[in-house]
Length: 578
Image (cartoon, rainbow, N blue to C red; front, side, top):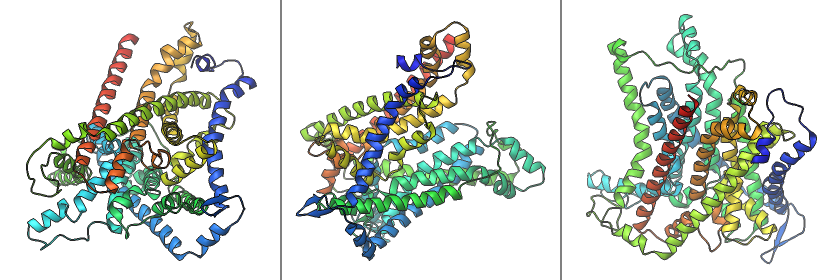
């Protein structure tokens, strides 16, 4: 880090030297080649091979693609997968947009709390959220128990779970926070002066929204849609847990080709087709989300008119909007609350009414040796991934931002490619790369595989913070007589410390929650999510509720602790600066 700090260019400094560009650029180039370029080339190359007696034969052929071209079932499944993820992302945007608009343009108090409540589910295990819906929709689940108990149904129905609709519903649940984050950020930054100018010109509220607010927020809608689409299109966990036969998606087929079927060339060909299809869909979405000729500002939204100044009709409308705004929160948190409640249920049957309160499911966890080993392994992997990813991402961010990498914009997007690859495909890509490098299954493989997508996330966060820094601060430090290292320690690093810690926390959460990539790399050394996944495949035990409750509480505590630490650091920095 000292070498990076001493090499930071300040305003009006001497021209940078070519050997310096090469020195700080090579790690970026090496990461791109080893963890992005080569693995994806291996995937493409494997798709043009064939299998013989269960082994890959190095005999170039297009047989796998011809098989896909003639397979009506594959084409149907591909369209079904794309349509389900597309529909879930679209519904997620439709739900998230009014929420984001209300939070950004209407709410006056506790806005940050309302936003945080939407984001928190992202920090809670994906397995936990999906399992909560299986517990609700199952034949012995809470929904059936309620309907039978209230007399609406005579007996439990099988229509709620293991259907295409259950997959769509769960995908929508997963999509809402991603859509909300992107849309809220854009809506909050729309200058109020543009809204006032439209109103002063005689435009109605609908006309102002149509010609001002919507064009400014449309690119963010496209980004939120793309994030939600990417999170679900390669998912095979959700279809496996809530979809059944009718909810089969293409991710499950790809995983089976690299598992039970042991046909890697055919699985690679399916993965390549999925990647190309996803790329086409995202290209169309981003093109449709473009807005030309619209100015963006940093003024942000002003507080809306106080409630006592509104007419009775507007007050009633605002009250209705508040109720509608609260409904998605109920949708987001009700499944998690029910799971926590069931973790204290004395019965092994997940149904109402509850049999009584108990802590025995938590007691069982303390005696489960294999589960405790999985927890320990998850912590080791998470720490290793966070350390490697955070240090690497911070160095890469400095190298890219301060011009030490040729074609910096290209490599910025290239390094982020693993984030844009569907999870099941990324898992396969990492299997091929680690297999070529002869890295055995276990912790080493898992760390490499998870770092491939955690590092780009931390990089984007740190890089975004660097780009918002005022260059005058660095110049003032240098003018005051500080050298490069002192400027880095006392000015630059404190300014980006929050972004680094936030990125590291998010990276640890991504690592601790990952199933799709880790499942291909763990072998006989499962992390906690893989251990839980394996347990759930062979049947339900109530202790799963207890595990997920502890994981959720741990995630929330990590958020609170890190938030307080950052606030104290900011307060200390502000105090020392006065």
